[in-house]
Length: 173
Image (cartoon, rainbow, N blue to C red; front, side, top):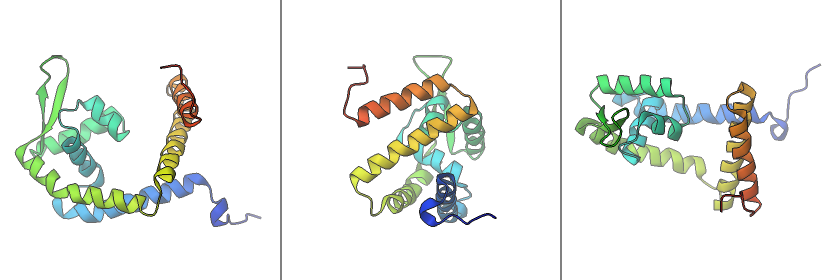
């Protein structure tokens, strides 16, 4: 017979999934009137925060795969909210930037990002936030290993994070 997990024994993946859904829903309710979904909203906000990012940099910053980031960028470009400009130093790369309309919309929505981020971290000490970030990154690395993508890189990143958390050197000076 299956026993229901008590809240403290609940699988971590369930807690993470439920939290992600709540954040997604909170953002969705706030940006729907602007014709955005949460993914497009976070791309706009991140381009406001890190203008001139390449697609690869944006995807890494948002922890999404490049094809997904590319599809979101294409949809925002069709709405004339973003554009890709040639990189002055590397002709193969394009730099992403908000259009005037995109900057206005992202600027108007920046308080939503601040509100959601603040609500998510409410009541946590700086130490708790640092610990949570470290643990969530470790779980993310574990999922990379599970999926068989770059297991050595994930393992090295985890080892560096654990060494740094203990206050030791990771060999990088």
